[in-house]
Amino acid sequence: MLNNKNRHILIATAQDILEQSIKDWEKGANNRVVKIIRASNNRCETKERVFQEFAAALQFGTYFGWNWDAYEECLCDFFINPDIDYKLLITNADYILTQFPKDLVIFLDILKCIDEYWQARETLRFQIILHTEPSKSTLLREQSEAYGFVFLQNE
Image (cartoon, rainbow, N blue to C red; front, side):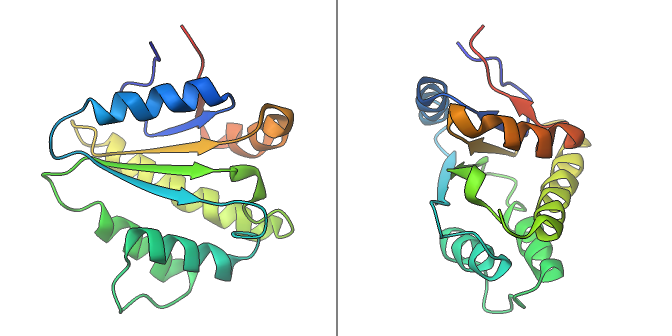
């Protein structure tokens, strides 16, 4: 059993933890939706590719402006339906914006803002899991600990 209740942003470093989280999601309420974003190798190495990947996976509206402000706005709009719990799985998260540290900070800032927004509410409406390989988890841990993101661990 994983201790990830009421945690909005989680980081899984082992395949079994990731698979258990997906199983837990599938056992949830009938309205629960799982959106999968796969960031592998070159897919999300630039902000443009991040925008393309998320816009496709989350079906951003045609009004999406292809910049960080528009990205944050679309993420907030996406999570607005009160009848659905949203789950995002970002696999191979180590590859996101690896050559652009300033953009990575903006990306993590946006995730943190969304996390804070939902922490202020009484019900859990979204959860993000960043999946990373154990050999690369040190870098992701360094980048995300300052944001208060939680690493999934077996109890």
